[in-house]
Length: 340
Image (tube, rainbow, N blue to C red):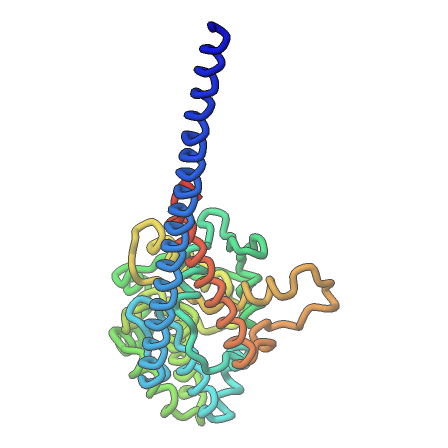
């Protein structure tokens, strides 16, 4: 009897455990289904976000196309259209003077709307203190020489003053130079551009004045651009010693100003970024494209001469898509639930 009772109890216990196991199994399946639904929901939300982002970008691009091609944002400046247009319409006598000054390489800069998002990414990835550009292709050292190779400007010789103040500069000038100083003080880029195109170069005096105006123009428009549309002391400093101006270290001049602009942007959280970020872009494109190639296989200098408008647009488009994918992946990582 005892054995029969024990057997009956054991059988009842086994029968009771079977529904419990089935119930637990169903609960696990249900939980997995919920997790899949949640994951799919998050992924759909991300896809919708990216789709809306692309739509907004498309609308912005269409709006930009309707605006003037030279229109720039308030926090970045890269006047490639202005530069290319003025070189194209410049008299041959003036072009010859520009080449003698050592800026003939800049005539290769094509007219295009540079993507400011890409320029900002380059500024974000510039390692201050090391002067290195950190990229997916590796780190690239940025030196006066690389600036010179990219743009075709001199990168050896004496340096320009790193910091110049109006009062300090004015005190050091001769009476003749003070007249020149007052002539250009407060000039805007537009007034300089108009004067550069209108002035004659028939006499030695006119040629010297054209050189001074061009040096100011090329700094403001391209090499040392700022979002303030007036001449600054750093632009004025070079024009008082025109003898040997082409032999001065323009590569270092451009790099020093660019580093200051990126420092203000990264450390001081300044919205505007002063400096020639276009040079940084050309260096990045050239070095990444030719990484690992032998010297004989690399394109000649200046590097900008090897980048046509079409080639630059193609590369910039690819970089923009990569930035978008990178941001999408970051969103995916952020939105996925822990259970996944």
